Amino acid sequence: MSTAPDHRRISVEEYLALENPSETKHEYYRGEIFAMAGATFAHNRIFSNLFPRLANLLEGKPCEVFGSDLRIRIDAADLTTYPDILVVCGGPQVHPIDDRAVTNPRLIIEILSKSTENYDRGAKFELYQSLESFSEYVLIYQNQAKAIHYVRQNDGRWAYQLVVGIESQLDLESIGVAIPLAVIYRNVELKQETEEPEKIPRRPRETRE
Image (spheres, rainbow, N blue to C red):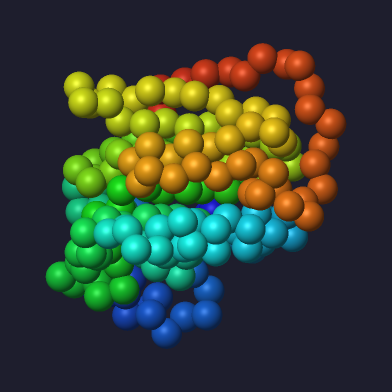
Protein backbone atom coordinates (compact mmCIF):
# COMPACT_ATOMS: atom_id res chain seq x y z
CA MET A 1 0.00 0.00 0.00
CA SER A 2 1.93 3.01 -1.17
CA THR A 3 1.34 6.59 -2.19
CA ALA A 4 3.29 9.20 -4.17
CA PRO A 5 7.07 8.99 -3.94
CA ASP A 6 9.73 11.42 -2.86
CA HIS A 7 11.56 11.63 -6.21
CA ARG A 8 15.05 12.12 -4.78
CA ARG A 9 16.89 8.86 -5.42
CA ILE A 10 18.69 7.35 -2.44
CA SER A 11 20.69 4.21 -1.74
CA VAL A 12 19.36 1.21 0.18
CA GLU A 13 21.64 2.14 3.08
CA GLU A 14 20.21 5.69 3.15
CA TYR A 15 16.70 4.27 3.04
CA LEU A 16 17.38 2.01 6.03
CA ALA A 17 18.88 4.87 8.02
CA LEU A 18 15.65 6.80 7.50
CA GLU A 19 13.24 3.86 7.73
CA ASN A 20 14.35 2.02 10.86
CA PRO A 21 13.66 4.90 13.31
CA SER A 22 10.58 6.09 11.39
CA GLU A 23 7.05 5.64 12.72
CA THR A 24 5.74 5.61 9.14
CA LYS A 25 6.46 2.71 6.80
CA HIS A 26 7.94 3.34 3.37
CA GLU A 27 8.48 1.10 0.39
CA TYR A 28 11.79 1.39 -1.47
CA TYR A 29 12.03 0.81 -5.21
CA ARG A 30 15.06 1.61 -7.35
CA GLY A 31 16.19 4.57 -5.28
CA GLU A 32 12.73 6.02 -4.61
CA ILE A 33 10.72 5.81 -1.40
CA PHE A 34 6.93 5.53 -1.18
CA ALA A 35 4.93 6.26 1.97
CA MET A 36 2.59 3.42 2.88
CA ALA A 37 -1.08 4.35 3.13
CA GLY A 38 -3.10 3.76 6.30
CA ALA A 39 -5.42 0.77 6.62
CA THR A 40 -9.23 0.73 6.87
CA PHE A 41 -11.33 -1.02 9.52
CA ALA A 42 -12.11 -3.78 7.02
CA HIS A 43 -8.42 -4.26 6.27
CA ASN A 44 -7.56 -4.52 9.95
CA ARG A 45 -10.41 -6.92 10.68
CA ILE A 46 -9.39 -9.20 7.80
CA PHE A 47 -5.80 -9.17 9.04
CA SER A 48 -6.90 -9.85 12.65
CA ASN A 49 -9.04 -12.79 11.47
CA LEU A 50 -6.49 -14.31 9.14
CA PHE A 51 -3.16 -13.92 10.93
CA PRO A 52 -3.96 -15.88 14.14
CA ARG A 53 -5.75 -18.60 12.16
CA LEU A 54 -2.65 -19.08 10.03
CA ALA A 55 -0.43 -19.09 13.13
CA ASN A 56 -2.57 -21.81 14.72
CA LEU A 57 -2.70 -23.93 11.58
CA LEU A 58 1.07 -23.73 11.16
CA GLU A 59 1.86 -24.69 14.73
CA GLY A 60 4.19 -27.69 14.66
CA LYS A 61 4.96 -27.21 10.96
CA PRO A 62 8.30 -25.92 9.57
CA CYS A 63 6.62 -22.70 8.45
CA GLU A 64 6.06 -19.40 10.26
CA VAL A 65 3.70 -16.51 9.57
CA PHE A 66 4.70 -12.85 9.85
CA GLY A 67 2.72 -9.62 9.65
CA SER A 68 3.25 -6.29 7.94
CA ASP A 69 6.02 -5.11 10.27
CA LEU A 70 8.47 -7.46 8.56
CA ARG A 71 9.99 -6.33 5.29
CA ILE A 72 10.86 -8.34 2.18
CA ARG A 73 14.01 -7.42 0.26
CA ILE A 74 14.26 -8.40 -3.41
CA ASP A 75 17.72 -7.56 -4.70
CA ALA A 76 16.94 -8.60 -8.29
CA ALA A 77 14.14 -6.02 -8.44
CA ASP A 78 15.80 -3.49 -6.09
CA LEU A 79 12.63 -3.54 -4.01
CA THR A 80 12.06 -3.42 -0.25
CA THR A 81 8.42 -3.66 0.76
CA TYR A 82 6.02 -4.64 3.52
CA PRO A 83 3.49 -7.31 2.47
CA ASP A 84 0.38 -7.61 4.62
CA ILE A 85 1.10 -11.25 5.53
CA LEU A 86 3.89 -13.61 4.54
CA VAL A 87 4.83 -17.17 5.38
CA VAL A 88 8.43 -18.40 5.54
CA CYS A 89 9.31 -22.09 5.61
CA GLY A 90 12.56 -23.66 6.80
CA GLY A 91 13.51 -20.59 8.82
CA PRO A 92 13.81 -16.96 7.74
CA GLN A 93 16.73 -15.91 5.58
CA VAL A 94 17.67 -12.41 6.72
CA HIS A 95 19.08 -9.97 4.19
CA PRO A 96 22.79 -9.23 4.81
CA ILE A 97 22.29 -5.46 4.73
CA ASP A 98 18.78 -5.21 6.17
CA ASP A 99 18.38 -7.28 9.33
CA ARG A 100 14.65 -6.48 9.43
CA ALA A 101 13.97 -8.00 6.01
CA VAL A 102 13.69 -11.59 4.80
CA THR A 103 14.43 -12.90 1.33
CA ASN A 104 12.64 -16.28 1.29
CA PRO A 105 8.85 -15.92 1.59
CA ARG A 106 6.91 -18.90 0.28
CA LEU A 107 3.43 -17.40 0.56
CA ILE A 108 2.53 -13.71 0.29
CA ILE A 109 -0.93 -12.33 1.07
CA GLU A 110 -2.03 -8.80 0.19
CA ILE A 111 -5.31 -7.23 1.30
CA LEU A 112 -6.46 -5.09 -1.60
CA SER A 113 -7.51 -1.45 -1.47
CA LYS A 114 -8.72 0.85 -4.24
CA SER A 115 -5.41 2.72 -4.28
CA THR A 116 -3.20 -0.37 -4.44
CA GLU A 117 -5.22 -3.01 -6.30
CA ASN A 118 -3.68 -2.43 -9.73
CA TYR A 119 -0.16 -2.40 -8.30
CA ASP A 120 -0.68 -5.50 -6.14
CA ARG A 121 -2.25 -7.44 -9.01
CA GLY A 122 0.21 -6.24 -11.61
CA ALA A 123 3.70 -4.81 -11.20
CA LYS A 124 4.17 -5.88 -7.60
CA PHE A 125 3.25 -9.47 -8.38
CA GLU A 126 5.78 -9.48 -11.19
CA LEU A 127 8.48 -8.09 -8.88
CA TYR A 128 7.69 -10.72 -6.23
CA GLN A 129 8.32 -13.41 -8.83
CA SER A 130 12.04 -12.55 -8.73
CA LEU A 131 12.17 -14.51 -5.45
CA GLU A 132 12.96 -18.20 -5.99
CA SER A 133 11.18 -19.21 -2.78
CA PHE A 134 7.93 -17.45 -3.72
CA SER A 135 5.34 -20.00 -4.82
CA GLU A 136 1.90 -18.77 -3.78
CA TYR A 137 0.16 -15.39 -3.90
CA VAL A 138 -3.23 -14.42 -2.49
CA LEU A 139 -5.07 -11.14 -3.02
CA ILE A 140 -8.00 -10.57 -0.68
CA TYR A 141 -10.77 -8.08 -1.37
CA GLN A 142 -11.89 -5.92 1.54
CA ASN A 143 -15.62 -5.56 0.93
CA GLN A 144 -16.49 -8.69 -1.02
CA ALA A 145 -16.05 -12.34 -0.07
CA LYS A 146 -13.54 -12.82 -2.85
CA ALA A 147 -9.88 -13.73 -3.24
CA ILE A 148 -7.54 -14.09 -6.20
CA HIS A 149 -5.21 -17.05 -5.80
CA TYR A 150 -2.04 -17.83 -7.77
CA VAL A 151 0.12 -20.95 -7.37
CA ARG A 152 3.45 -21.43 -9.15
CA GLN A 153 3.55 -24.66 -11.16
CA ASN A 154 6.55 -26.93 -11.73
CA ASP A 155 7.12 -25.41 -15.16
CA GLY A 156 7.22 -21.89 -13.70
CA ARG A 157 3.78 -20.84 -14.88
CA TRP A 158 1.22 -19.49 -12.42
CA ALA A 159 -2.17 -21.18 -12.04
CA TYR A 160 -4.98 -18.66 -11.47
CA GLN A 161 -8.08 -19.27 -9.36
CA LEU A 162 -10.86 -16.94 -8.30
CA VAL A 163 -12.34 -17.89 -4.92
CA VAL A 164 -15.78 -16.31 -4.45
CA GLY A 165 -18.51 -16.59 -1.82
CA ILE A 166 -18.62 -16.59 1.96
CA GLU A 167 -19.06 -20.38 1.96
CA SER A 168 -15.95 -20.94 -0.16
CA GLN A 169 -12.59 -22.11 1.12
CA LEU A 170 -9.08 -20.84 0.39
CA ASP A 171 -6.72 -23.79 -0.10
CA LEU A 172 -3.13 -22.70 0.50
CA GLU A 173 -1.28 -25.46 -1.31
CA SER A 174 2.29 -24.38 -0.58
CA ILE A 175 1.81 -24.67 3.19
CA GLY A 176 -0.85 -27.39 3.30
CA VAL A 177 -3.65 -25.52 5.08
CA ALA A 178 -7.15 -24.33 4.20
CA ILE A 179 -9.11 -21.37 5.57
CA PRO A 180 -12.84 -20.72 5.02
CA LEU A 181 -13.69 -17.28 3.70
CA ALA A 182 -16.24 -17.09 6.53
CA VAL A 183 -13.28 -16.94 8.93
CA ILE A 184 -11.41 -14.33 6.91
CA TYR A 185 -14.44 -12.04 6.70
CA ARG A 186 -15.75 -12.43 10.25
CA ASN A 187 -17.24 -9.07 11.40
CA VAL A 188 -16.42 -7.47 8.04
CA GLU A 189 -19.25 -5.56 6.36
CA LEU A 190 -19.56 -6.96 2.84
CA LYS A 191 -21.08 -5.29 -0.19
CA GLN A 192 -23.63 -7.06 -2.34
CA GLU A 193 -21.79 -9.30 -4.80
CA THR A 194 -22.29 -8.52 -8.48
CA GLU A 195 -22.52 -10.93 -11.35
CA GLU A 196 -20.00 -9.02 -13.39
CA PRO A 197 -17.31 -11.41 -14.64
CA GLU A 198 -13.82 -11.14 -13.23
CA LYS A 199 -11.33 -9.49 -15.58
CA ILE A 200 -7.94 -11.09 -16.00
CA PRO A 201 -5.30 -8.44 -15.23
CA ARG A 202 -3.14 -7.17 -18.06
CA ARG A 203 0.56 -8.01 -18.13
CA PRO A 204 2.13 -5.86 -15.39
CA ARG A 205 4.48 -3.08 -16.29
CA GLU A 206 7.88 -2.82 -14.60
CA THR A 207 7.27 0.60 -13.09
CA ARG A 208 4.20 1.96 -11.37
CA GLU A 209 2.10 4.77 -12.75
